[in-house]
Length: 170
Image (cartoon, rainbow, N blue to C red; front, side, top):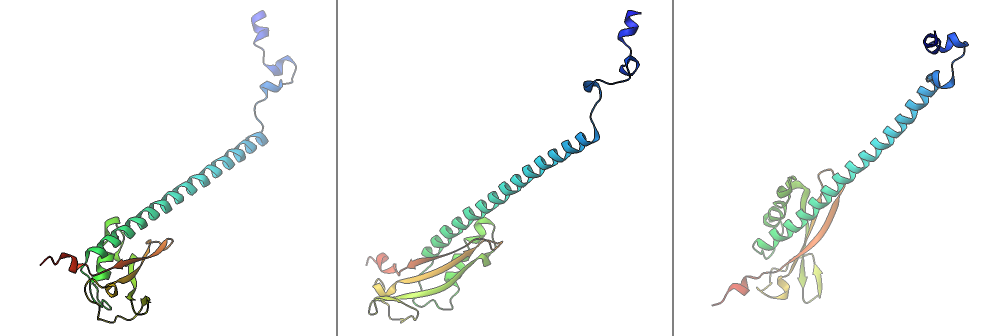
């Protein structure tokens, strides 16, 4: 009988459950679900921010790569006396976009200015009289690179000169 008395349920012993034996109330379950939901939502928000920042950083790195590539390509293409309307400079600069998987339209030559020794400044009109190797043979090519999503953009200048006279060793 001693065994049987020890195994009696709490309701048989006195009709009241001890606090530890009562379980969890509906209010406690709802509060714990709400708290867990709040934690999950804040973690998801932080993860979204990290993913977005990583994507922007990736685009910024690619933008810098395109700038470097466009500069190299422009310096490698043959110098033109008055390149207005010529596609050579644009094609050279745009070829850098493909190296990072971007469309060529993300790179644009937006301006070419010419150095005038007489005016001691950059001018918009090509005189056409620049002698190879002269200071008047300098060109300032302004390029704009924009990420495919349009969020990042950078304009920069490349100064190009006619260096063919350096190769003429005759």
